[in-house]
Every structure is written in C-alpha cells, then in structure tokens.
Length: 137
Length: 139
Image (cartoon, rainbow over all chains, first blue to last red):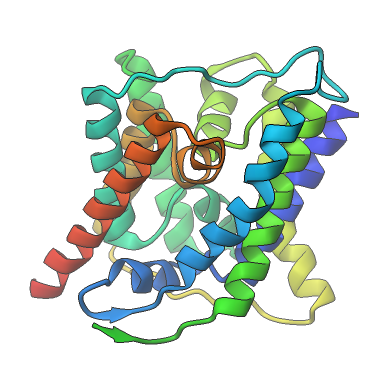
C-alpha cells in the first residue's frame, strides 16, 4: 500500500506544480526578480502549502506510527553549520540561473523538453558527485 | 519594483495541493517529501528505492494527467543555453545534497515543522537566488 501512496503523493504534488505554474522556470525567475519585475506568486504557493502541512504535521507527529509504515522517519538534524549555508547558497545560485529546483525539474520531464531534461541529467550528476566525495548531509 | 504576472489564486490552490501531497506522504508512509533527497536516493541508496522511484514517477505523471483532463497544454519558458542549463543543474544537484534539502524538504517540510535549520537554509537559497537574478540582469 505504501507504494501506491508514494505514487499518489507524487501525482498530487506534480499537479500542484502545474496549477501553481511553478513548473514554469519563467514564473520562478519572476519571483526571484525582486528588484525588477516582481511576481510574488511563489510566496503564495509556499503559504498555501504551509497552511495545510504545518498544522497537520504537528497533529500527525503525535500519532504512535504512520498508517503504512513502522515508524516516522525524518531528520532530527538541528545543526546550522557551514555545509548548510554553503550548500543552500550553491543551490540558490543554480536556482537563480535557470529557475528550476528539483521538484519542478523532474515534473517537467513530462513535457519532453530537451532543455529541462538536460538540466535534470546535470542535477543527477551533481547528486552523484556529492555522494562520491561523501559531502552529503 | 513593479509587480507583474501575479496569480495569487492559482498559486495558493497549487500550494494547497502540494501541502496535501506532503501530508499524505507523512501520514501514510511516515516520511517527509524532500525531492532532492528522494531523487538522489534513487541513485545512491537501496533503502525505499522503489517508493522513491514511484514518487518521482508520480511527479511526471501529474502534469500529464492534468493536461489530459483539463484539456490544457502546459507551456514553459526555459533558457536554451545548454552550458547554462548544465551549470545550473550541477549547482542545484550539488548544493541541495550538501545542504540536505531543497525547496520542498527545507522550504515546505522543514519550515512547516518550524525547523530553524530549514528556515536558515530557505532564507539563504532565496537570497542567493534573488542576487543571482539581479546580477544576471546587469550582464
């Protein structure tokens, strides 16, 4: 059953990215263009997601265990260190260059656009490189 | 600053769906949706590999289902510079793994459970993203 849940969550997430237009890099770059022609939409996507997830996370966390798994499995890493800042800064630079982050990049494979597919391949190479040098968090 | 192309209703609606997807994954499977982690783990980690692949498959199927049922073509505008696409893809892949999260893991899940670590990460990648776009506008 948890396999079906994974698929369904992915589908709902993907539809959310399309409806909010976050799948479109131009829309994301519009949000990051704070000092030019600013499109605040991305902030509303975050607010919409947080309104739903934030209260429900806190309720669900109190449950003994998830419905289809033995236990809750999430990071309790609280450290704010150089890796966190450096990694986030590197990610931000890549995000600002093209306007794609991992979720929308993978969803946009659906459009069979050679440009976004190129980005996704490079992104996976990036994942692999970090694993190779054991820098992953 | 001029405000342009602002679509608050569809943005909020899409955001609510994203929040719902994250909650379903947490309630049933006990895991948080961090897409950079899920994607990287399909490559490098045997644990939950099939679950992770199915989630990513869902991400791709979602837009296809939407365009079928809504009878609406999805249009995106993306840079056509392959050098820039490769550099940006590498930076996103490397950066999200070093910091342990992206817009979903740190931005939505982490901020949603008030993790200071994730809030710091989110502010950092937003500021650098904004600065990158600002610098690009001068080039």
